[in-house]
Length: 253
Length: 268
Image 1 (tube, rainbow over the protein chains, first blue to last red):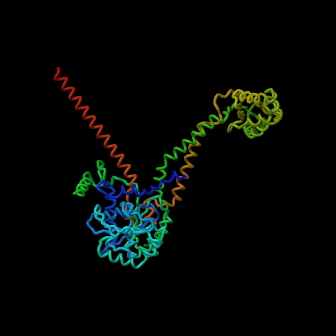
Image 2: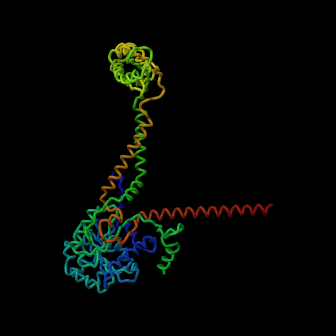
Image 3: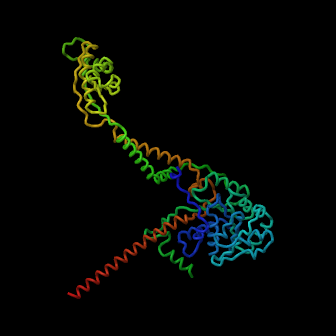
């Protein structure tokens, strides 16, 4: 009877997910989706100072890593100082998306093996700083709930406008709930058709119990209507013909 | 965040979900209808029905060759009795003998059905058989034998054959149209019911509404399905490039024909 149900769009493998990283050839509609997400996050967190936002999800392959990377890139486009930290110390994905090694990274900094300046890598292409996960530790939860991690974040808040933290799915491990104590807000990535209602309720309950401030949800993998009610029939996109080309021309400059 | 809100069934969404699956509902209906038709056509032996009409007149008073309304009422009320008499062993044994004992009494009784014509004193006897001629033969044999025996039992009554049985031309069972239509409706209805049940008991988060109903936190981002979006974009690009190449081909053929025409003019 599975064919009667709407098939949940499956998560993509890292290799093909790299195609989904924002670039000059990304379609206007996807760009705008991330711009809208950026605006919503900004308006959800109006306190002054550095905003630290955690991305988590219900399950694996919900598209959390690609979305946090694209969101960080979108914020970096506004010339804000943005840092992306891969706190998934069990299955790090940010380094695979960016085709880099995961070390030196967060874990190496937390154990004092290197400095944060050495560990942070600047990705010039996206004007983005990234702190990869580092060598995989045997005790990820302890590291993420340690004072060293808290102090590291305090130090990094002085240097950046936005810090995005990629954490494992809540249903898998407790790490996201631990990190939520030291961030300004938590965003939950949900893939339609993949997560059951009681599972997401359980995720939210767990985060709330840990004291997380849930900024909102990202629906990853919606069937997108390209024409908005404001578009003319001749337009392929929501804001009028030529806008997309004008935007790309500005980007190219 | 406030406590999790209860959610309810969205009828509008249910309607559109069913509409999306309409192709499946119709397909299953068509398959069921086709299967029923094929089964009826190739696996069910067609049956033919021959009918005999018998007029039964019971005289409540003297048989003075006048018919009174009481006679008519009496006749109508006695039709069930006469119907039973027709299927008695005494009648059917004589019918079997008339038919050269090709059938037993039980077999003839199994083919037999009788019904009174409403508000009349007419009894219609129907015989169903897979050979149309035999159906007519058995019905006519009953029509020949039954009246005399009924009149023996019901003294003072008159039993006359109104219409003898003709050889039926059309199949009476199965009704191909009826089977096909009923199967289509049943197949489609069951599929529809399953689709509705799956929707009602769907426990997955499918869209924004599901999240909004459960939580107070907003949906801050709606990211398109990259793979689906890429496919649509590629299709659109292929469509556009076909249009463009079509236009180019038309332009070049137009310009070629114009050039050819001008050459012809020059020559002339």
